[in-house]
Image (tube, rainbow, N blue to C red):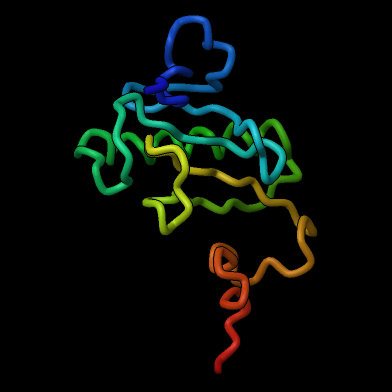
Length: 131
């Protein structure tokens, strides 16, 4: 069995891949970014589900998300908004079974009509059309 990709990033020799860390999480730029500066927030402890965070991790995740949001806006002032997401389980599209939260920087005009945001995971449901 191969070692978990996200556990591997935390080991010696991969420090240049870590953009920031706190006691419970690391932040790294996504290797396959959806938008420029797309960032992954990854717990240091190995577990698969967002719902498996302990109380300390739950308190800490907000801090690192906010820190990364502030840092991204400083790096690129064209960033005007963010989407957050986590694929939790096979049916949700999770392919690496170590929790990771996506922080997607958004810019005005990056897509024609962003209304509906994360509802776009099921494209026909994004636009709030009543049937």
